[in-house]
Length: 222
Image (cartoon, rainbow, N blue to C red):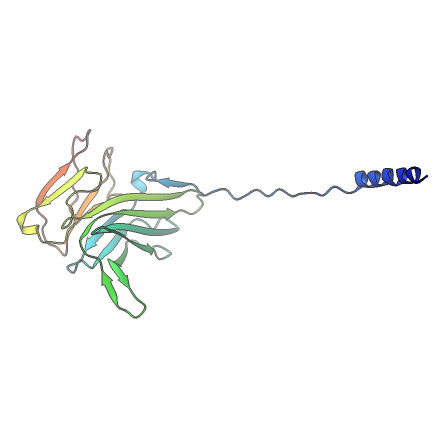
């Protein structure tokens, strides 16, 4: 008798379980990852960018022209100070003025205003991030620079500058300028370079370029 009375209860329980409302799950589509393109911005659309030294060698000036086409932009710098890797970061004002100029300290400062400055400066890398209105991808322009007093060649060895005796003790910076200040009609087979000095001092020396396929060079003296 006990067994017979249990059977309908078990069947009822199974029926109720089978008829219970099935839980629903909502699938959410994750946002698409931002695509970062490195050095793929067309050459004619790249901003012309220079790092200008200071007599103290404790600061340099970041100068960029034609970056105002971007909605937002930021700069990341890494450079070698002796055996240490140092860095600096800066965001450009919005809307971006043309040209944009900003002084960057080669060191660090406390909230109390006390600063320590880096020495034995050698070479570094610049990453210029550009976000454009209406585009899902982000463009990053990456280029190297070197403090000629500490290192005469860019890290990839393709460009070497040996200053003359008159410039041996001058603070000079050799930099991949990412873009050029004027339109170039011909194909560019190597990144553009700039040698910047303090003030209007004439820069003299020997420039060596190790790049195959070069047939001529365009020089802009601005």
